[in-house]
Length: 312
Length: 58
Image 1 (cartoon, helix red, strand yellow):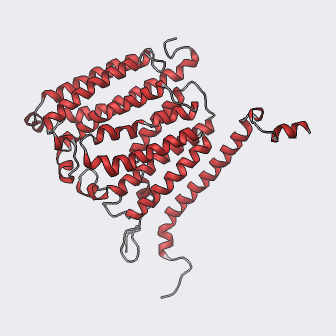
Image 2 (image 1 turned 60 degrees about the vertical axis):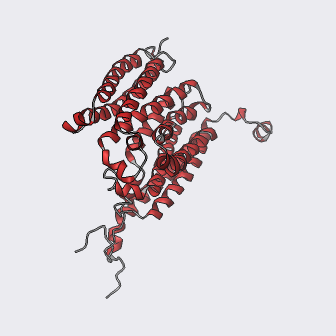
Image 3 (image 1 turned 90 degrees about the horizontal axis):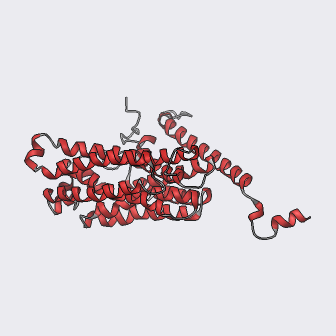
C-alpha cells in the first residue's frame, strides 16, 4: 500500500501544509504581531473588518516574500542543517510551484491591501516584498557580511505598514518601531550564527562569522546591543511609550545587555565547553525581547483610552 | 483495469482541495464584508464630483 501523499508513480504529492510551510509561518507570526501593534498604536481607529483584512493581507504578503526567498535560496537551504527540511530542498514542493505561489500571493496581497486600507500601505507592502525577495535574498545575502544588517529592514517594515493602514501617512513613532526591529535583527541573527556555526560556512553565505571571524562577531553583537538599548529605552519617552513600556524596556535591556556582554567576554573554548549555552540563551531572550517590547507598546495604546497608558 | 468514477488519487487529494475551497470561500466572504463596511462607512458628502449631489438634488 502506498503512502497517502504519494502518487501511483511513487512521487511525493505536496499537501496543503507543505505549501503553508513555504510561507514561513513563524516569520508571519512576527509580522502579524508587529503590524498589529503598529496599527493599534496609531492615533486613528480602524474598523475591525478593515483591520482584520489589512493585517491578513500584510501576512499574506510576508508569506509570499518567504516563498520567493525559499525558491531563490533552495540551493543553500539544502546545504544548511537548519533549513534542509524546508519544502523545496526536501523535495516536497517543486521550485516552480514556490515561484508561482510567491508571485501570485504578492500580487494578490498588495492589490487587496490597497483596496482594504490605502495605496500608501499597499505601496509599502510591495516595497517590503521586493526588498526582502530581491534586494536581500537575491543580492545582499550572498555578497556582503552586512546582509543581516541591511536585510533586517525587511522585517522591520510591518509596524510601519500597520501605522499607515490606520493613518494613511508616515510618522516618527512608526519609524521608531521600525528602528527597534532593525537594530534588534543583527544581534539576534549573529547569536544564531555563532551556535549554528558550520551552516553558513558550508553554504558559503558571507555571514560575519565567516568573513570577519567569531571574535569580531561577538564584538559586533555587543556594539549593536548598546545602540539598541539606547534606542529602546529612548522610545519609552515618546508618545508610543509610557510607564509600562519604560519599566519593561529597562528590565529587558538590562538582561539583553548582560547577555551581549557575556557573549563578548567568551571565546570559542568557553562556548564549546558548554555547547554555546550563553549564545543560545541570548538568542532565546532576543525573541522574548522583541515580543515584550511590542507587547508593552500595545499595552500603552490599549490602556490610553482609559487614562492609564502613555505619559499624559 | 476498470475506470472508476472516483480514482484513488481523488481521495488523496480531497484534503488539499477542501482546504483550498475553504480558503477561497473565506476570501469571498472577506471581500463581501469589506465591501459592506466600505459602502456603509464612507461619508459620501466628502466625495468630490457631482454624482452623489446630483442624486440628492433630484
